[in-house]
Image (cartoon, rainbow, N blue to C red; front, top):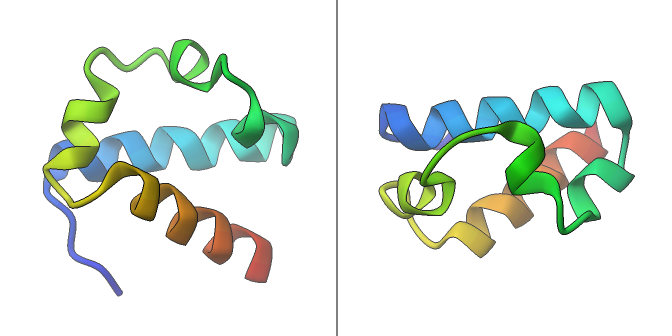
Length: 65
């Protein structure tokens, strides 16, 4: 399990909730950042590492479940 700083974890939780609501397509849309309504989402993710890598790991975890 990855320990993320609170701001990064908050963004990941919002992304997961969006996936729960709208499925896989919600993760692939260019509107994801507007949909999760989290100002500075990328900056928050950077606190936990590379945003692209965090999203990839999040998707892998969601699809494995």
